[in-house]
Length: 243
Image (tube, rainbow, N blue to C red; front, top):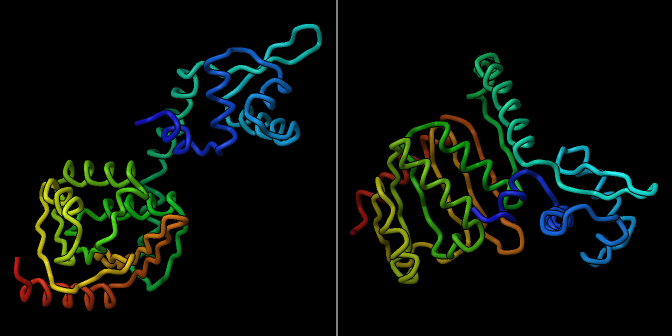
């Protein structure tokens, strides 16, 4: 995984990522010099530095009453993340038990942006059930390249089967990529779907993804009756679709 993507996954903003990379290469640097090098207003730079200090990414030293900012030892950050993960893992049984009372109730969730897509992919993998996909012929890989690669890797590791129906006129490059997926069966349908919309049916959920380059979005509808309806429609199409 590239550094920019890793830092984005750790909830750093674009300006914070620029600051981190500059300090990683230059070492201790005053805020004014940082602002010049990233081409940002001094106030915005100071605000970003303050946020990064509170997140544990930066610290500073003082020389002649001037602050020189520097990145923290990455190992310290990793140790902090591990501690948070361990704390969450201890709480998981209680949280999951409390969720049972409402988990199968009908509800609609809306997610926006690449981070929203990642959340939905994680949700899909949690159910460990067959994934039925009415796919778009749009190349979604260019929008969430790392998230999609991570999703496929974990899906295969968890041995979750995936079934995809896709337009017969889908570009060859996309077909070639899909054919590389393991534990995945694909069927093609004439004039099936040329829109930027795909649908994932999993567990008692139906996720509809709008793949826009500017800002993808997802609507997840939870509820066994709705999911069962879409699952039956998918299976009917699957049985009547040629390879």
